[in-house]
Image (cartoon, rainbow, N blue to C red):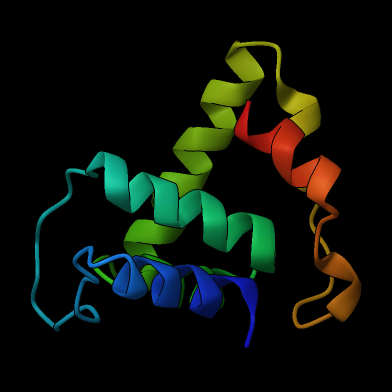
Length: 108
């Protein structure tokens, strides 16, 4: 299993609600703290592979995830944390997975 699947399984084992996958037609644009946390987990696991990140978030469409990432990266730049933005890379490349240290720096 990848880190995103592991994260969702841990939520389930802890008795926390695991959100259902995105259903077509959902229009909610507002991101909850839980959705953003899942976004960060997906981003640290899959880099800029937006379809994979969306699978971890589960409650947002691919377009919503991509848009959220763009705005999030802009905010990191404004706050002087641009070094935390994952570089563009080859999609599906196993080398894109971050080390534990990189993940911790990203979440700061």
